[in-house]
Length: 394
Image (cartoon, rainbow, N blue to C red; front, side, top):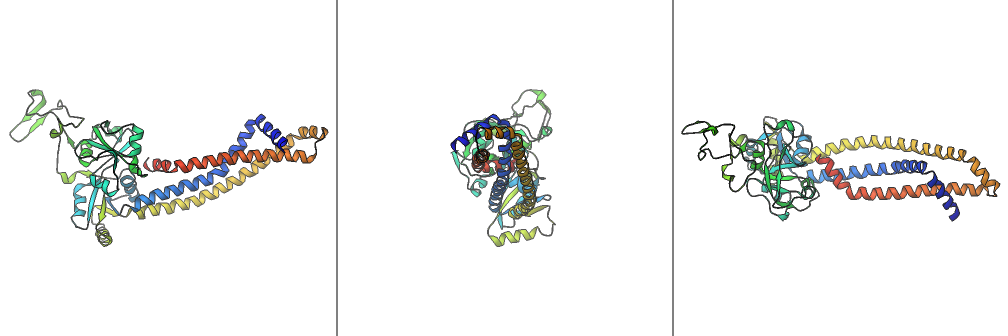
């Protein structure tokens, strides 16, 4: 039988293009259903685990899914902002505390920038593997994968960039100092860059720092001056990096209660407090919405799995069609090899020998397909979590 496998192997090598097409077809038919199942399973695990650890989320009225994806997973389309006053109004009930979230407005070399407070790290149980968390204006903390991809660590600098090139009138680049790198958590936090909410507002242009006009002697820097205020000209240089020397010059304009945030994580004191808070938003009289992210994600997953049933049917039809096509290929191959088989018969080979040669070819093709399929599934199992996190955030 070894001779049969040797001859079959030489035949497959000689007709390598045909053999590659057959193996690729078998590989696709066998791996695709498994890959779909693994990816959907990993997606469900990540989405539900993340949403289950987020009790409540308050944000602007609109798409609940956009709100959850942006504020919990740091991906998707950013919702309309809400004001700081609306979040303070929820806290005023005394039933929960709020953790502000501002994301979707700017990035740092492709990594989403998330404005929040140090309470977020405590809530998500995130601790620095290197360095510390931010304590003042202009500092940033990197997620584990973001730090690895960007090649940065404590002491390095990172410049923000507007999410849209057409948003240059609002958000502008700000160089932040990296003070820490978080330990890996296996969540979207690994892919993000975290800054204080005030730093996020500086990136939005709400706050800024510039030359001290009281000390500057250049008259072209000032348009008008009186006892109450100084109106500067466009010539005044705004700082694009917050340092110890210029930190005190940074200030904010307008009423702080109107400053924007994407959302806030609401952490109730207990289950009863959470139910009472949800009741405050039922009648729709408030300008914001309060949702349970877990319920939103469960609805999404139910829809996805209904679609998966259709995909399973489609994959099954494709598998049957591919199998029939392969049978046709083998049949045509057998017909085209009649002269070869006739020569074997004339040399004394039996019909059993020809059958064993064909069987050896089938076994070799199946073995190659199984080996490649096993390797593909192992790679998928190893990188599925990373793939899904990338898909969620993108």
